[in-house]
Length: 173
Image (cartoon, rainbow, N blue to C red; front, side, top):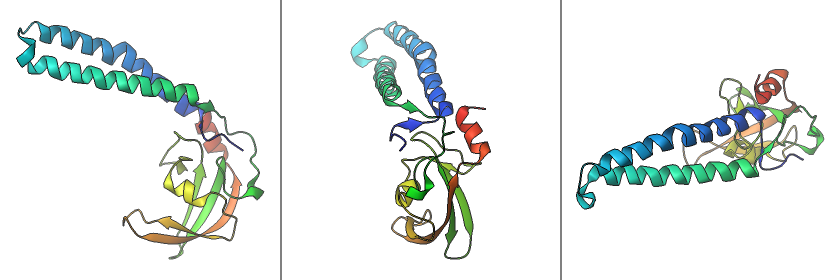
């Protein structure tokens, strides 16, 4: 079974880039903004100074959150074959049929993974969570994206291994 903190190499590297940009670009700029605002004089009534300090607190919080997430994350290449006989799990591809006959195929990857063009959904998303454990032939209630309190009935048509294009995406290719 894939860890709940699993994510693709692509998404892990993206978070690393976000942290690097934050530390090497955004925080130094903020320090310069604080210094420039100090030069305006009286700090007790200095809006620019207070604004820059608020931004500093937000940047520090974001930096700490990103660092903690990266420590907990488990990089997964999703190349390993998952046991689809267990039903829907992270690392599989699921074909769904909606009540109106429309079909949709989604690939469930890790906690940070999402790509609309390839129909990749996060393992922590509502869609994936509603599908977990379902077997081919099961009917599952999914939240209706158009209405907050409504649900759609879908039938799980097939559970398969990930397509090569999705595996390549996960590896960052």
